[in-house]
Image (cartoon, rainbow, N blue to C red; front, side, top):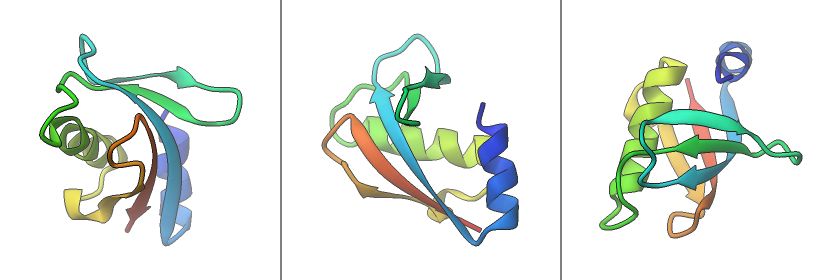
Length: 88
């Protein structure tokens, strides 16, 4: 599912993603897409001490083929709904 975003990132300088995070999932994976286009992502890390945010950044960086410093949580650091900026 993230392949379409990877292609979009190749054509643009940066990409904004709307994400809903599900901490303590059985594995790190994309769980689907909501009707408004928000991507549902399950993360194995707990939502404490910023562990889920760090795991989300690592997961997205790995999946999109960028480095971790190129993935930034723009808003929603303390919420399940997040806006994420991915740069090249």
